[in-house]
Length: 138
Image 1 (cartoon, helix red, strand yellow):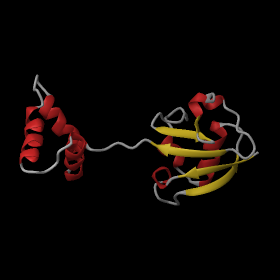
Image 2: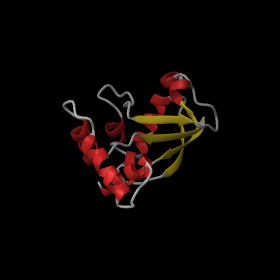
Image 3: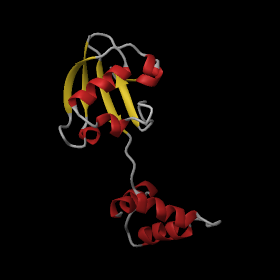
Image 4: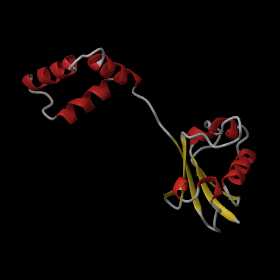
């Protein structure tokens, strides 16, 4: 049964990317095998040593998280649209700054002092705006 699968470049490591491909697969393991045929090495990127999909890859079927549809046991229906989305992380420098500001019993004063200085200088007024500016600097 053919299903449409959108494969982002982060998963294919840029070999092809943001492709929408049509494959015949009845379930997630069959889908992963089909993708390996189209994108050699993709299973090594998105699966663990046992061949199971890594937890950092999200799979949506017709805009529903496959985990709520039965996970690997879900049987694809003719015409299903599948989207693979790798989790995205980042902001290591920002995380380190927050950790430094709040670690070892700290009150977060350095971060709050910077926010206060911004307000007094006529800069960011809302905390959300201030935090967005801090993130943008990282």
